[in-house]
Image (cartoon, rainbow, N blue to C red):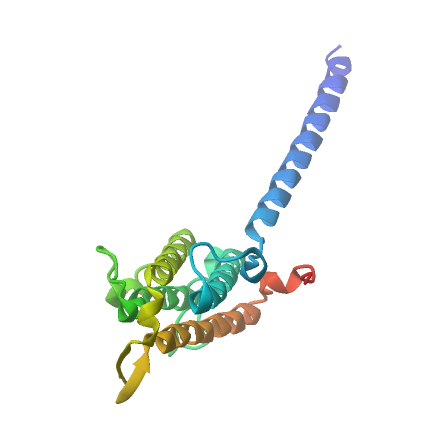
Length: 206
C-alpha cells in the first residue's frame, strides 16, 4: 500500500521541483536583464542639464553604468584579487574611482559629504555589496555636482599644475581620469575571465 501511495507523492514532488526550477530561472533571467540594462543619455537625455554640462553628464552616466555593471559581474571572492603585489585590488580600484568622484568635484564647488573620508575610502572594504553601494553613491554625488554647477562658472579659472585651467577643463579632466581606472578594471576583469557585460549588449540603434 505504501508503495502505491509513494508513486503519486513522487510525481507531485517531481512536478514541484520542476515548477521551482522554472520560477528560479525566471527570477534569474529577470534579475540579469535588470542588472545588465545599459543607459542611453545621448538618446534619452540628461535631466536638468543642458549644453556642455549635458555632454559631460552623458559621459558620466555611461561611465557609471559600465562601472556598476562590471562590479556586479565580478564574483565577490575576486574583489581582493590583484594582478601583482604592488598594485590595487579590484575592490580598491572601484573605491579609488569613488574617492575621485568625491574629491575632484570639490574643485567645481561641491564639497565632499560629511561622513565620507576619502583618505581611507580606498581600503575601507573588500565586500562586494558595500563596494557597489559606495560606487553608486559616489556617482550620485558626481551627477548632483554637475547639475548644481552654473553654466557661468564654466569659464572660471583656477590654479592647476603650475598653470591655469577653467572649470570646464576640470570636468573634462575628471571624466578622462576616472575613465583610465575603468580601463584598468576592464583589464583586471578579463584577467580573471569576466567579460564586460556591455560587450554582449545588442547593437545600439541610431
